[in-house]
Image 1 (cartoon, helix red, strand yellow):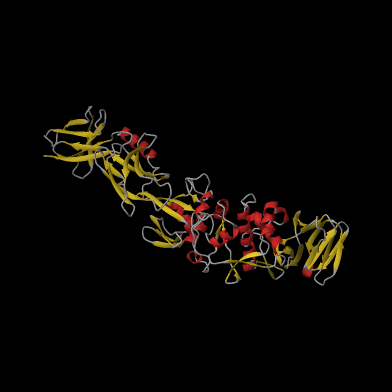
Image 2: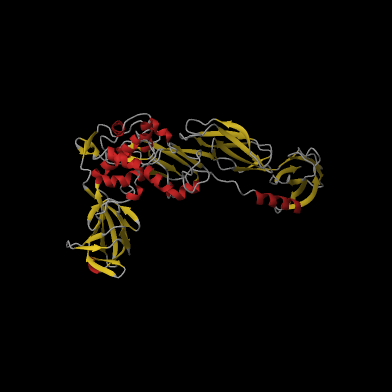
Length: 554
């Protein structure tokens, strides 16, 4: 008996790892990077490489539009810093500073510390000279070779500084001509090494977007552009290159128009092969922002994404873009573990919403929420599901186990054919034992007959499901009794298995009678002195649970 207890306990200690409940794995793959609306930058580069001129490329992505013109020198403002306790403004040439009343003061070349003063004042200090000026103030240099700098970075045009707040801070803005603004945007939004026609496309799109939207930041109570992706990424003069400046010059003042008005020229990195209609993505409908084919976008490293490429596309996952049910529950804020996740698509092929199904609840999640919470590259994604749901926890040796679950590709790339794999107790590698052909809804079923406690899992291409363990209980059988002899057998058939015989007392408890060891064929035999109900207990050893059976001797 002590041996039986020790063996069983040791095995159970090793047997707790694989899941004992429904444990789906969700695999996401997708296409593209960005919102998908308007001009695909990689697509534009592809068209340019294939000989398309910039005006034709713009007309492809912004349907029904034409080119128009605006002033290239009209002033625009870009917020460079805010909420700061100090700034440094400088130039390698003399500077002048003008306060809110129009008074101008001369400053020497070099750096000047700028800090907030009381009541909206701004303090400018250089060495022993300190000026307290009514803000906002403007710094100007007339030098054509020594631009103004803010914290060491050069900017065209002039720099404005304001002070505000009960615990005052300073904010800085760059005011410059529209095309000079585009010079600082273009190399931050598109690689300067790209084809000249693609750079022209980006220059016109950036200029048009600036005219159409007017900026989403404020400075000193007035509208201004943000320097980041809230508007367009702006790097100032230090970002400029000869190639990008040439593209700005070649398209000076050109914008995209629809019906004579500036179009809202959204752009993004990678379409995945087709752009999206604005309305399909929940954006304001525009007749020129409709889905178009994007055949040359395939040059992008993000044309396809998921577990098969070299980059990490889904933060916090390993393997990449592979989620367990608990991971997905936490990330999406679900009230229970998801058993299945399905997607509904819009006319632009993107996901409109996903449906997360749990044991008792179902929740619909907008694709934009899914993208944000999981950090996905786009809303053009597919959800594959692998699960082994209904494996019984224990079978008796020689019996079959009914396995079933889901193996739904969901459109995911690299999914491949589906296989059932096993790893028997004591083995270190997996063996494919069957090909799985799911039904149209992704469900599958298969019968397995484990000869020892065995882990099973479903694999499909790059996706691997969570293992489920099927325990095998020692089979104990009695032959028809012939008093005073009780014979039987143990499965698996092996010699030396200890069989314990017990007889039921009148108080329904069991009393020990004897123990015997099985022979090479797994058989055992006892001679009993009393009639009544008997049971035999045996444990075939590691890899098996103990089993028992009863018989009545008359």
